[in-house]
Amino acid sequence: MRSLPARRTVLGAAALTATGLTAGCADRGRPATADAEGAGGHVRPDGPEVRAAEARRPHDRTRRVRLTATRTRLALGSGVTVPTWAYGDRIPGREVRATAGGTLELTLANHLPAATSVHWHGLALRNDMDGVPGLTQREIRPGADFTYRFALPDPGTYWFHPHSGLQRDRGLYAPLIVEDPREPLRYDREWVVVLDDWLDGVDGATPETVLAALRRGMDHGGGADGGDGDGTGGHGSGDAPGMHGMPGTGSPVLGGDAGDVDYPHHLVNGRTRTDPETFRAKPGDRIRIRLINAGGDTAYRVALGGHRMTVTHTDGYPVEHTATDALLLGMGERYDVLVTAGDGVFPLTALAEGRKVTARALLRTAPGAAPPAAARPRELSGTPLTAGRLTAADAVRLAPREPDRTVTLRLTGSMARYDWGIGGRQYDPRRRHPVTAGERVRLRFVNTTGMWHPMHLHGHTFALPDGGPRKDTAIVLPGRTLEVDFDADNPGLWLVHCHNVYHSGSGMMTVLGYRA
Image 1 (cartoon, rainbow, N blue to C red):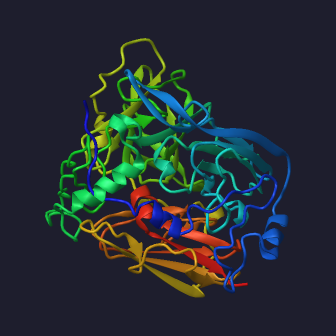
Image 2 (cartoon, one colour):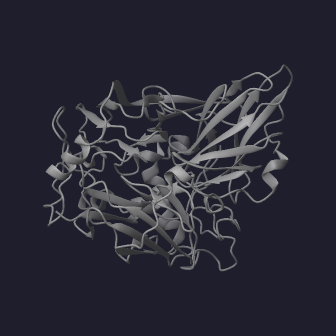
Image 3 (cartoon, one colour):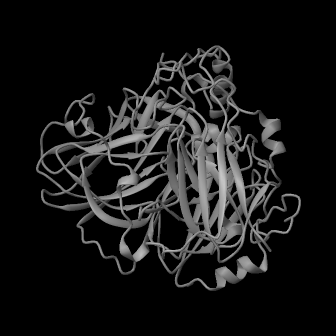
């Protein structure tokens, strides 16, 4: 029997309640706004400024969707079946497609034994639909439903997942594709690929038991510098049933330690590498692959055997087309690539960065045997492309302008204590960093820790330095500083957090609050 993670832990249920993550229910048809103990001089999530911003967005045809969050058993392939929570009876959940300039109206019915929510990752949407319990809405209680309704101003590759506790590390996620009515790319086929690291339901594990084991595990070893000091990320051994110490992991691309959790499975579109999904096309087809990293703790190095990929978008926004053999996706990041299909059977392989395990799917354009499950494309062997090597397309570059305000966010915490935070403090929804509508804001992420962190900004996209791409999620390497700029054009209370689910669950989150 395959054993599981160990490294450190969570703040238990009481701590999550204290941060406002387990607020009361949201009633269907009423704005799902949580007061968070008063706006404190900031714009309220359902305030007039938010309503005015939404009214200025186009509201064309409405796309209506019903979705159910429920307990289920899922077959991951190769005889692996797990109890988990999911949207319907599949992972990823059913893909939602809509058109930019239109409106999405999605009703979520909560059949889970716990309250939940939906966050629309990467969308510049109205604040009271952003799905952050205790900040922008009240959670949807068991047995209730809630309708999210908002304009879709920007095309791109997005996804959605809960922002309640650690639920994202179960099966509660799905792609959201916002199509461009004036699509400039030309291609024959489209393939949406969702990557995930999986542990829920294996040997009785849940994200909550894993986070508890992580903290206990680090009590036995691992220094505050993020490992044993040699860059390999040494891990102590936890004492939770069915778990063991994770082998040392290291990645020069990520600055050392690659991750916290020894996941028993890595998936592409919900399937294990020994029983993969097969995408069928014809030789010569031009295929747009939309890659989404929905993992909790794993960066993936992705390559398509026998092919070069041309990167066209990241986090929904176009970039100057760049060819590469492989690219790296941190948790929450998305990349769109174009490939011209060869003749044969080819593995789309996602290597868990800094580790020795892979996930894969198959591209098939001809009869024949598939490569062995353990085979790795040679394209994975070089240095993968990362966002810092991309340039924003001219149409989406921010106009040159000096920042009106700089918000410095010190990323703090250690492996030894698993006390991840921002500015030495754990998340408190009442603590806000003020911004003013119309400002150019510079976010200055100062990583004082020994770990890399994929930092995600809600409700906006920022520009990486020196003409870099527009993104909503960016990797901040250990001991490094990353400065990104965005225009404050979407009023409300907006979360900024690490997209490692165990880091954010331990407190690495804060709030940007627009002044009223």
